[in-house]
Length: 295
Image 1 (tube, rainbow, N blue to C red):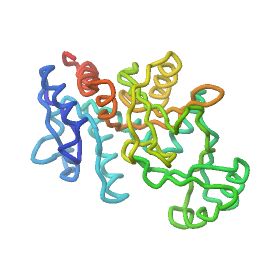
Image 2: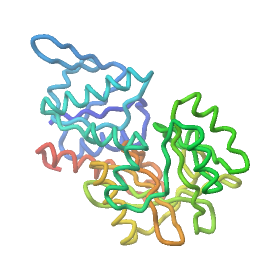
Image 3: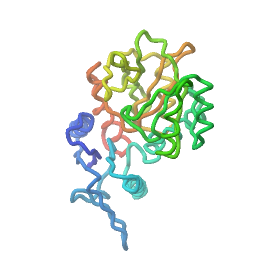
């Protein structure tokens, strides 16, 4: 069975772990960089990547799509949908990747599933944004399609001035009420879900003097026991966005856990550092089962 692994960085630990897991379970892993993707629309529909016929794949696992611009990203998503429609099992499904990548879509999915989630405002209106920050005193700005903690800003009622520039630049702002964690140090919880189960969880502890806990921004992974509350919320959040595998970020509050967001193309390195858990093996097994292989 041929299984593609879409990744822009061939040194990525998670992609390598998935590929190794596929090989150990009898499948042939083929790494693909979608910067080399080509679609030919004629009497037949054909897709090629780095000289390979993508329609000959049994499955395609997306670790990251890479990007050059908005048109490029739109093409890659449409290509995933077309491949899925042509019989290639795509994981995560294109709809799930899009829903998780768009924080507004994630918030709506979580709300409809009845999952605790910070009060959130998405708006093109400067006055509405200013009112929201004034109401909560502090609010977190997140790029609508942001990742790895890049571009996060903590806005205060005393100084909401960055809002004007953010709206002028992006046209829209995504704001969440700032929730003070009840933990002794600034941190959140990353639960890694694979095929309807939590493979493990970690605390992501912010570096000294920072409130941002993303590992890519200097956060440190520490072991977090998987409680029944973590299991319930993380699995429900994964189901809400339609993901086979994902990272679910939660925060500890005085009234229990709340889900901050869902990552549809997560790294498993932090979980491996803390627990030694190989999510690549688990993802490979889940995909092979879905594609009709052993797994």
